[in-house]
Length: 435
Image 1 (tube, rainbow, N blue to C red):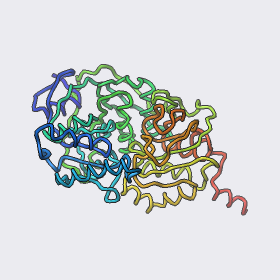
Image 2: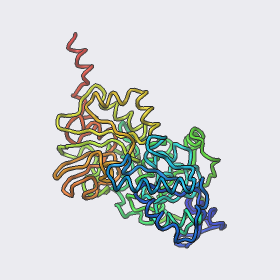
Image 3: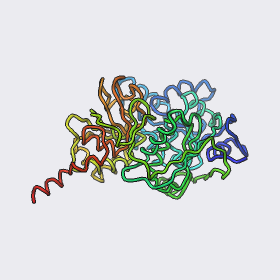
Image 4: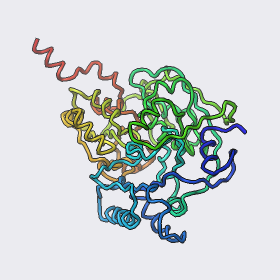
């Protein structure tokens, strides 16, 4: 029987020659992930499975990133619970604040904990990020996380698939964020419900690994069980550079069955924005109108990588955030923070009137470091813009790429980088006046 890429990975981990959509299977796990919100609940459930030790201390990853550094007493208690469990179980992959810390879905690939062909669950919905590396990865609840930590396996209903065929070359300022927002705008937030989004086509060659991480990360925003990319040379180069385990490469059969095929010509896309209050409410940048803003957030597991910071810094270089606009920049990991420092990006942000935070999820889920008041609007490179997601239920979030977010911070309203064409950087202006 012909299988998709996801189905082949699941079949291998279930010890079966083949699986088909809708089948219930038990599959062995290569990694189980939890954070400071979901792990304490899983720890409470863990004893109910009759185990005193996790199945493999090297295959559990615990990352305090949502409310860490601790924002209040409750957050401190949650992190203390996870920290104590990690020590008692001798968890090898526990990442303390300040010690190689970061936002989980940027941190794990960076640390080489994910490789092609893996089967991964995480008690966080954006665990689907690792599909960029050719892994099957998906979000689960805390009880399923507890079961995974105890048994090293869990059950899945094998998903059917949607083939997303990418062609063409993205234009200037078009990134992975624009591509996934465009796709969600096409099929809707439930358009891939419990299906695998399987990306294919010659357009993939035009995407950086950062683009792929962003796209896979937001597969869940289309309702998908997972998103996954084929394993090509850029993927293999990334895995090698980060010291990942030997990859196990699976490819979809030529006659694999898909529910449908969605074709996207990347050359036709423009920078894209998702208006409140759903990621499917998308518009190209030339149709956004005049939307005044109060805040910009550049960061998160979706767009806090060094490539994202470079793009934002390039747009803002020699410019200032508009009066009255708060711009918050959050590197996704300590390593990215240091690299941004060494490249001078952090200085550019501070000189532009931004604040730079330690790695944290922070404002993305309405935690801290940028909560919105009633009536405020924010352009964010995060992944969700639901009602009340970043603060007051009468605030608004506009999802966009780092390029659009940075340009919006400068202009003071929702705008793309091309809007800065008549706003020369300060250095250029001084040079002209000197003449």
